[in-house]
Length: 444
Image 1 (tube, rainbow, N blue to C red):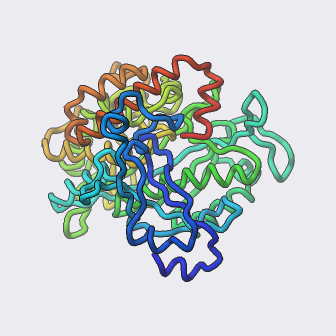
Image 2: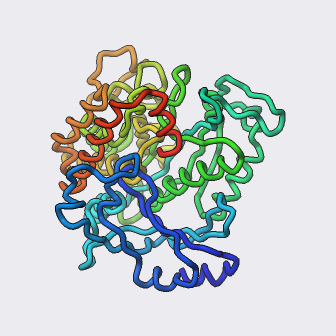
């Protein structure tokens, strides 16, 4: 970490940041001359900071605040180390951190530790999950009362339409995407292909697979921060909110994963198109946990506007081979790359909690060793299937009482997350839809 600063003497400031339960970066600005102290000793701020609501306010009656004196946690650098923040005018180094107790124990309310616990469960079985994510987002001109696609820097025109896999749509914002890829390279975020999507001004970028699930989550979290910051430099917003427009499909975060054994072999591959029994067991685990973990995949009021039939977001609990209407899809291709795609999450999720929930559910299934229902055929929206919770409050209640969730997340994290979501639910009932959208466009 000190080497990075020596190689980048132009850096004028440091930011240290951790992800709270909503995926918001919380941290501090630190003068460069105090960098050694941060690297060696970390920094401190209240444990309650990782359990703020979406407005950045304390949770009412949280045991982390007044009841315990709002105690500090110790925040230490993650293994990621420093990286630039290319969207800022000031040359700044970002140092990701995560929270521990004074005695060195991981703080259970930190979402990155929640994922680390799941990865450790895999390691105990000699297994390593391999993870990749696809992130959809909208570029939005939010300067007026009505959101619209930004005018193209090339032509000055607005193309108010969805253009699926349109090179023209990408070309309209070529300077933004060129700068975005350069920034990903500088931050060591493995951005792969970009495409235009079905919504007006909607795009998707894939991040390459990682044999380190924590790093894959870091990539997604940092990528969201980067895209939003860089868009503002270009004079418009970028948002991962689930559904900014009534008339267009929303944005998702699709997660692909496979699992390697201690010899590096893909345990989902048995040389057939069907895949191994371990793949089927993992699918069953994902399906079983889906009703109770929907709150992780759809964490906000706006999330449930995306999850309607026929809008490219799953509504039924089912799986299939090569079928994008299902919640769990087994992509086609070489059996050596046999994997599971989990399609339920919106773009507004916390990547650490989402990846933990999916991998944890899959491992539950592997441990239980049971087969899933038969894969469906055809359009899942037209079939009688078990349904995910259709509203936010129901999802909160299912999360609280789900035995599968209890196998994945610590009781402290479950409690903190429930308090966060119930406060957001309560306060959101007092806002208009326009106020909700204006909040979510920048925060999620």
